Length: 157
Image (tube, rainbow, N blue to C red; front, side, top):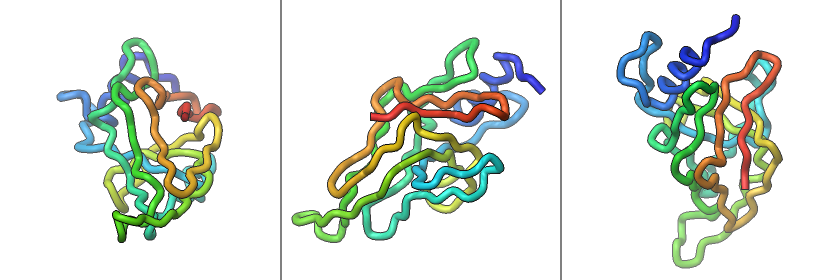
């Protein structure tokens, strides 16, 4: 099945909460999570960065995304900044806690738990080491609806 550009835009607008009335409904929020093992083609097998004592948290992005007209993609219209990879227990002297090598991303229904309803590979893997942060500058994180043989991707810095 192929989708028209208009229906693709409806789906993306719904995903990021940008539409008020469309037939597929509107999500109340969309959370971006990071994977150290990207899910397989069936959507299973992914390993999200653990939030155990390393300051990792998903980022709410529905207020940071814009859908491109006549396209099948959405991009961030604001910077997306993750926390620094540190142990937050002692802010005066934080110790480090690597997140590992980030290979992909997931879109989730909640800040923790919830359901992953979409995922994709980063264009290139990036290692988030102690005290480093991961961020996507404006227009750098893109989510694109593609055919089943092609996956969504994001550029990273």
